[in-house]
Length: 257
Image (cartoon, rainbow, N blue to C red; front, side, top):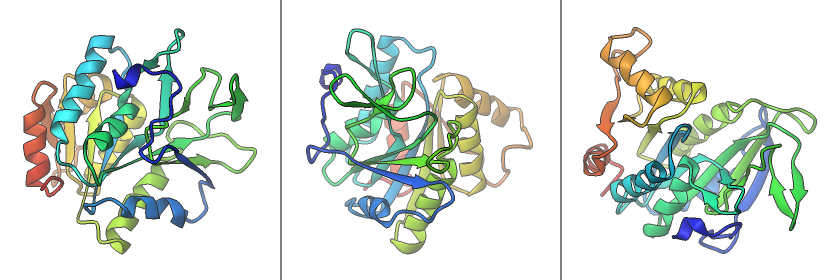
């Protein structure tokens, strides 16, 4: 029910902080510090999308993550966008999961990143719109970092990957984070890149089977012994009906108490 309210700011403090950075600049300390406010010094990135999913599938997805992350007190983050349907209702996406998890778990911090792919604009009731499809920042998050290619440049949807990987590694190196990981659900080519990069870094990577598209493609690569999958880190496959299995792995790998 919470996700059916249109254009409602639901961030824990009543606001969401937006920061803008150029892709080649140093990481913004103000944004990095938001992550360090998490009760537990661990971070999970959600990669993926919801293309091809119906309303029931999306509700099941939110329930899956809500159950799997019960008791989570670290940073949970994803892309920082929100989709609103023509009727003005929120169309839940993977980017709505961090807000759901953070709302249910005190001490958890929800963050997001967005590559600037078009000229930003204010529309209707001063609503910030990110592109021609009406995509907006997701107000369920404590902070969102918009990554741009200079003030006049635009980026592809992978434009924030380098930044968020750097941020997570900095949290581990300088802020005492003890575990970094990635959960993949559905998604396209960018998600595939994220999965392979996280595997290459040796992070725990959890691939939700039957969620669709890129995630299932990588699972097929793993099962076929594709050499693109690092031998030292082949990821963990979890069925989308088994939230308790994901919770068990999160506990085993140090993300849940």
